[in-house]
Length: 262
Ligand SMILES: NC(=O)c1ccc[n+]([C@@H]2O[C@H](COP(=O)([O-])OP(=O)(O)OC[C@H]3O[C@@H](n4cnc5c(N)ncnc54)[C@H](OP(=O)(O)O)[C@@H]3O)[C@@H](O)[C@H]2O)c1
Image (cartoon, rainbow, N blue to C red; front, side, top):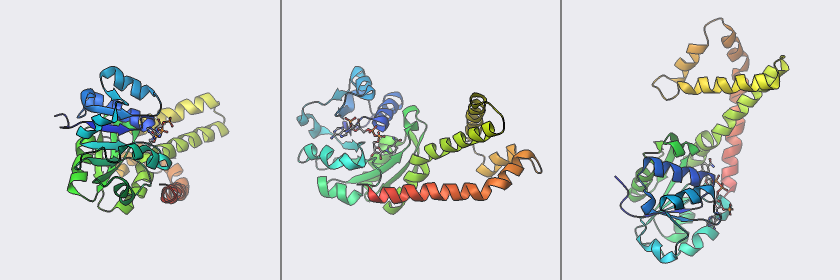
């Protein structure tokens, strides 16, 4: 079923474009119900316009919107929402995808219910994961309605956990890819050409990811590759403490940075 009222997407960069792609592919937002406010004519905005969405229409069209999805950078949100003041229906829900911007600040600016959703760009293919938090039923329901077809939703019961969720899902794809780069460099250091090591490490990531959508636990997936006394187990034993230290450093720094945004 499509959403009952138009959705306004503010900002159509990397995440906004992924969201548009996901909605047009999986629903529940149809092009006819999508309004995009964007500063740049991004590929996502162009695709949405070609499908029939309204891009930067006159502001009166916002009256009917049931939700406003904020996908601009945290530093630019006050400028982005200023033109919306006084334009939205009383029950329109603000759905913020921005790292580090507190619900109380959004509610102060626009006096509407707020949901915070932290998705990955996998939403483009309906394969994302998203942490969600809202203080109100209306906010949580809107977050679920807009994202349930695009992502596995993880409900949080405390807004303070959003920064940890942001680091663990939103930022983690980059952390994982950095590990793949490091593995390729290690292979090169042991004689592989750079091209061969990179191809092998990328292939290893595809192989690791292939089991992740199933029911097996992470331990079971690891055990399937690492037999007792084997080469993989030796590598795991040698690196476990370093992996933990690296992950703690990355997640901890991302959480601290989120606290400085907004
Ligand atoms: N990328 C991710 O994987 C990801 C994941 C989870 C959450 N997020 C969150 O999503 C937000 C957007 O991230 P992003 O990576 O998509 O950034 P991005 O690629 O820079 O996209 C932001 C877009 O917003 C536009 N914009 C800025 N000010 C605007 C305004 N006043 N009115 C309309 N549009 C405006 C920008 O236009 P210009 O190009 O003209 O500046 C740009 O197209 C961030 O708050 C981030 O924390 C991102």
